[in-house]
Image 1 (cartoon, rainbow, N blue to C red):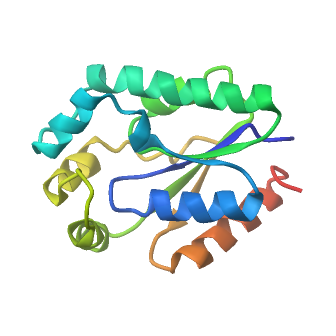
Image 2 (cartoon, rainbow, N blue to C red):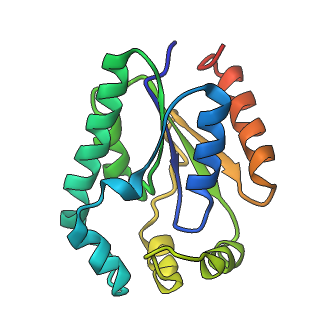
Image 3 (tube, rainbow, N blue to C red):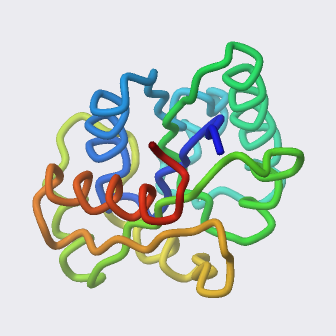
Length: 172
């Protein structure tokens, strides 16, 4: 199967953008950071330390799903970093897209919170990471999701991701 997209998912601070950019480079695909699809009102809410609601997220998810559809039309895959915390959010992204996979970056909350706290220049405050863990619906029973531990360095995570996708027959 030729994939239209790979969504690198997880809570803020898990390394979605770093891993996603490295994976895209390795595959020769474009990389899109899901943060860039947020409308300004969402960014301001997060910057103020206010968690987003489902209503805030639906248009954002629709924009990301449209980017996956565009990738399919272009005939090349895209890697997108997107928290995709709830199954309903992932369902929006996978609707009509059987040719996408999710890479779920997982790890100990203390490690991820420390990484988020060390980030410079990002609007998402470390104080919201706990709300993301509370919102996260682990994709344990979803067949199109691969769990990846965030403890190794990003190149090692990408290596594991590519190997898992190849084992599944998703990549040549």
